[in-house]
Length: 189
Image (tube, rainbow, N blue to C red):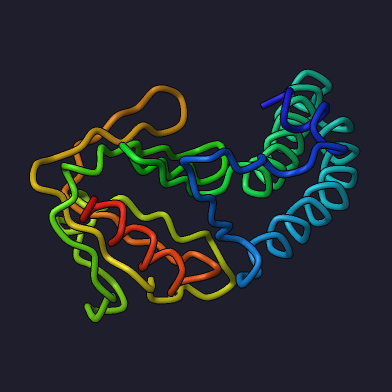
């Protein structure tokens, strides 16, 4: 988190090697604007809230300030991680890292199908437990473009070391047709 929030502001996105394709997923969403708005609100409200808490209890005010600074670093790191970690398709696997909080790496032979998503806007709780949602948080939740199904459950990694088995992934890359064609051609090879 501290690496992404403090040390990556001059870095360019990853470069493409011979056997891999990269796809951004943030350019056609307003997730960056949402994170910047949250940073702005966090700074403005935490200043006033800190002084209010400080007049009541200094220890609670300092704890609140530390938590707010941690949240600020997290939001900055999330912006940078989203910008610098695109979806990657190689000859052997698909790597989906969504910011700092989610990661799924799937071998190509485990992919059963990829198709345009035509399901409901919102999934039930039971269904959502088996789906890796690689669509960024936005002002309004959009339907994903694609749904990828796996032959067997895959292990998704989440923030703070949590893991969960998933059967599908929902995603919305910035270049949907190129993503689809690339993944289909890699699966067929």
